[in-house]
Length: 215
Image 1 (cartoon, helix red, strand yellow):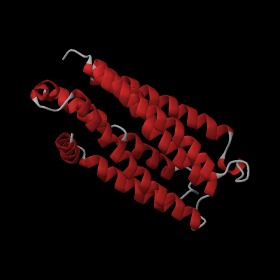
Image 2: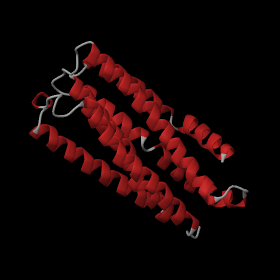
Image 3: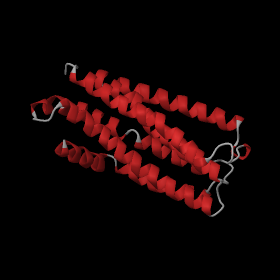
């Protein structure tokens, strides 16, 4: 498992450097615009960074299929459970790094008075939900039917969350919230419980499907 994880992290570094550069640019734009920009560019950049981050594990699955490594790797002593777990671990690592980065940025902006605390909490909640739900729904499909169908499901989840968030914020703008009615810590905790549970359940399902799949 450790060797597979190191190999996948190396592949991530080699093939996904552009993602890291984009995240760095998104962080700079978010800091520069804060929470007061009319076009919400900072919010868009943070969300798009998390979308790209949530694709890391899926990108590795696609690379394995393109090089037929998913077939060759069956000769290794590693189990299929180890192979699935490695992809989920890479996804979780990338998710944690991006979420921690923007959590620091949002909290700093809130402390400086450039962003409402409730806005920081809501945006962090969106990042957490998006970063875990998208791979939770798409990765089992990739291990069951292949990377192409998995990406279709991934896009469907992203579109659904995007439209849902857009409708929510157009109906209930940030300044309509009040901290007593929606405490930021409670908001973040509630947003974390369901996605984490679904992500763990997704891993169990992906392992089961991949172990029963004919390659």
